[in-house]
Image 1 (tube, rainbow, N blue to C red):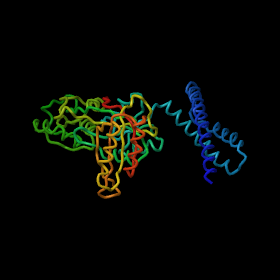
Image 2: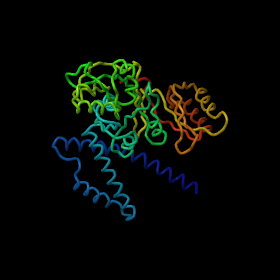
Image 3: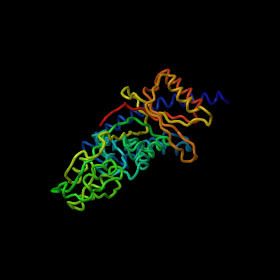
Image 4: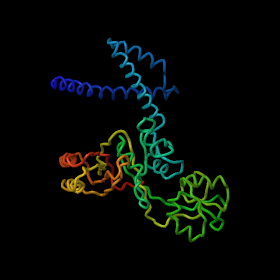
Length: 362
């Protein structure tokens, strides 16, 4: 029985390797099709042509049961081809959580200047859009130097199937914005996200402003623009001021100059680039004395330096935690392979969540 299974797996591996080569050839042909359609202004979807392809190619399969599956396969393959052509037409689709002008919107634009940014209502919706194929990548915050980790994003990475292919640092500068013609003496009340109000607490107190909380900084700026009231100001970014037609009354009003948010780029495919020099590991350890210490010791044993270690509660298991670790170096070495092998012995669950380049500022 085992010989049959081994033989079947050998055949599948050989066929899959050939199919990968043929898939690349087919997608290169799809590029030529797109170029032709683009040149002559033709739509990407040509339903008649797709129906003809299905009819012609399915006739090559004589087994009636397998033919049904082959028709589904062809339709899915052509759907992938269309998605690829749409990507060439519209650029990379970059999901982010928030509205135009929010810091996630700004980060996504700086990381992917030619990308097509798509707004989602929350982190999970942006994350899921990549899983569903609606977006190519998601740009989500994972940590703020002032407020700490963004637990919801970390949880999505731990429980989901997307990989980190980059972590980028965006320095946050908060500014006092107002309608054109307003001065600092006109402002009586400021609105912004609670975190931004907290970051600018000293400045707000010095000026004697009343405060009003908003869902995010960009919506605060929109509120000020819509109100067209000189006495109302917003705490937000310069980019947000430009979007909503506001003026920067006073710049850099956050009390700490070291206010940086780290954004992770997440995709279905694990990146393989020499430019990515650091690795993210996520794991749970067995409920035994010293198990976390053992895991940490194994990482150090193979020459990897930990640059971050955080614990997060597991939602479905009270008083149980998983750990998020960033290390210098990648795992495509003999030491990396040995380290993972030993970690698997002390960890209940181990996930290589992705790679990134250290301290990449945008």
